[in-house]
Image (cartoon, rainbow, N blue to C red; front, side):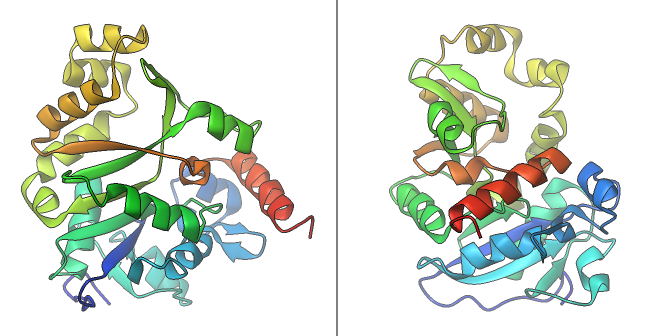
Amino acid sequence: MNGSDSVTETCGSLPAVILAGGGRDDKLALAAGAPCKALVRLNGRPLMAWVAEALQLSELVERVVAVEGPNRSLTDDGQPLLPIVTAHGTGFADTLLAAVEAFPNAERILVATADLPLLTPEAVDGFIRSCQESAGELSYPVVQAEAFDRAFPGRGKTVVRLREGRFTGGNLAIVTRRFVLEQGLAIERTFDRRKSPVGLAAMFGLSFILRLVTGRLRLVDLERRGTEMLGAQLRAVPVQWPEIGFDVDDPDDLDLALSFLRERAGGV
C-alpha cells in the first residue's frame, strides 16, 4: 500500500497509526544492523511488532496501519506485520499527513511511535478514555516521573518540574485531521527544534523557559503556550501507565526493555 491508498475506517472506531519513518541512520538501527529502528529485533521480534500487538488487542482501536518513510524500509523488508502507508517526504509532518490520508473518514487518529515495546492494551485503552472528554486537537500523555522511576528503575528520562509535580512525556498522541492538515509547518518547526535549547528558547521565549526550569509553571501554562505555538488546542493528559513513556533509543534501552519483558513474563 502506498501513500495514495486509503484504509476504510469502521464507523465509531478510533484508528491507530504506528510511525515508522526512520531509516538506517538512526543510531539504534545502525548498532543493530537493521534497515530502520522499527525493525530492530527485541526477543526475536521487531520493535514495531510489540507496539502493533498492544494496539491490536486494545478494545478501543479498530484498525492499525504503519507509516514508513520514502525509503520504504518496511516494504522492502518483505514481511509486513501491518498494512503499510508510505509517506511522500522525510519530515515528521509528512509522516503525520500520510497517517491521516490513510483514514480519510476519521476525525481523530491515535498515533504511536514504533519503539514502545512495553506498551500494553490496557495503557492504550486508558489513554484513549482519558482523552474522551478532551477538546484538544492534539492530546498528549504525561506520566508522573516517580511512577515511571518505580516501574522502570535505571531508565533515565527527561523530566519537567511543574507545580503539580515532576512529569515525563509519553509516546502516544491523539490528533485531529484538521490539526494535521492545517498546521503542518508549525508541527515541523516544533519537531525540528524539540532537542535544541536555543531553538526551544526561541519558540517558547526566554522568560517562559526560566519559569519552566525553576518549576514555577503549571500544566495549564504548558498547554496554553503549546496552543499558541501550534495554532491548535493542545491538551496535556496525565496518565497512570508509565509504559507509555518507555521508548527505546539505544542498545542500553534495548537491554533494559528485554529485562522488563522477561520480568513481566515471570522470568521466562
